[in-house]
Length: 306
Image (cartoon, rainbow, N blue to C red; front, side):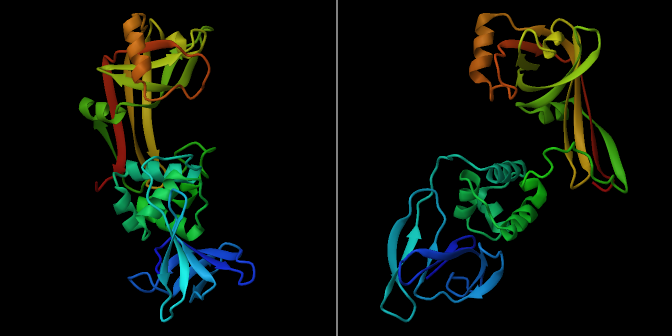
């Protein structure tokens, strides 16, 4: 019997063969993956040292239907069923936690193998978490959060309904201006930003929009009767930022320039075809607005020693 961190240990009833207890393997005592194991039981959330008997088998978490193989039990001629599965190259129905893990891993520039190594788990198990609905144990989330430089609460989405920036200010912060080229890099290719406009009633408004970067222009699509549509044929401000609450640091980029409606059919077709995402707000939003910045500035807050 061999296992990886994150695999599932299933104990079956000798009489019926039905699973009567299962848990996640959260600790190995031998490099080759042989028993004993530290197991966090799903029914009690307790971790115990387990020497699996003949009524136990390992479920190697994978991405397709398990394929049964057989290998001998240590020191016996009996056989047990060990489930293995090939990795899938296509993500299907990822869960919320897995999505956040995958996004944070890519934001940190970590490969699947490197992130798994830092979290002391199998790369296949990490791929499973990112691609399938899953409810990993607290121990797994703690290791992942530490490996990705974030928090368990963030991976669980605990701060979704809170505005960013509630962390404590740095003891010795450094606020520096960003060069236009660094601002363009931070804008990247697409994302969510805020456009500041004067609404139809004359009052100022700031509206979040999904945007794309095309050549030197910032483009977004909206509905003709929306607040964001008021940006057309005026000079507007467009802002993008990122706040890291855990590290009390972040950046912001501000673009200012004239906005206009994209009316050329071929250009509209290209924008629609190559957009990275549809507007999160949904509905009919086929009016493309282009902002050509005449001013591009930004600032970043970091610890003074960085």
